[in-house]
Image (cartoon, rainbow, N blue to C red; front, side, top):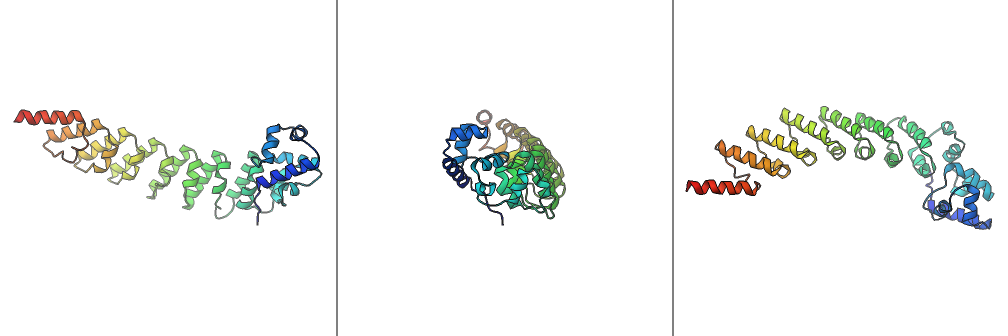
Length: 276
């Protein structure tokens, strides 16, 4: 069972060993080739020493890496030796626990190994540590496996999210959980495609360009279909234009009156008074 690294406790250990050696924070910083602020942050538990510094730090204090970290971690041992490929087995928990100490290159290598494991393990707790390219691949894997996508979409590129949305849409599956992360162009594309096929696109309205909503509203109204759901997202000008078109066609505008602009209302009042 992996043991999480406690940054605060590790900081206390570094401070205790430094004092035992009668060293100031400045002296330790000079010996380690880091800034005074770095040592201060270590001891306050606000950051961790770089993994490459652990052997040097342990040697300076006359102790072991295990004592510095508070427990034995085969992953850290291999990371220090830069021999992660020799680890016989790997779990998401072990990588997550060691992540604060690992440089990006080693995190990338470990992520690759995790993503190759059978049954696609949940590595959502590592998402923020992975490069976008890795998250993009993981997003596609999750789409193919029918797994939840939201956490992955948050860190993925917009292009990858758009592609995932198109795939799901073709499969007739919901894109609701990733819609907030899609580009407006892709949302517009899918909404127009649904409208053309006579399918509902109302769940996409909050994410559409106003111009797109206006165009769809004109299209639906011309076909005699309800635009009630679109009204909160339409421009005032388009509402006015649709109202005028209806009047010219002898159609009712009662459903639009609460939403049309002041100028149109004045014009309607003038028309009504002229008839009197």
